Amino acid sequence: MGTKDILNFGKNLRKLMDQRGYSYYSLSKATGIPHSNLHDYVLGKHRIPLENAFKIAEYFDVSIDKMLEEDRVSTERVDKR
Image (cartoon, rainbow, N blue to C red):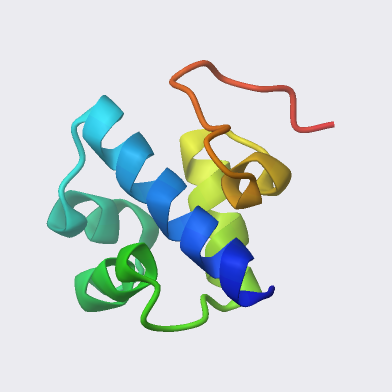
């Protein structure tokens, strides 16, 4: 993932969390990813490990491609095939 992808992932993660009512704490409990890591991903401070990126995308039932695209995530579920 490049820098732009990391920033897009963070923006889309924040958007999904807001739209679906998740705090860092609640998403952390649901995914097993530390809340401090989630916060850093949203801010683009750290590269997100691929394993965590897939875990988050799967949890929200969106494709990893959509998580990396600029302004592409919506509250609708997408077909991950």
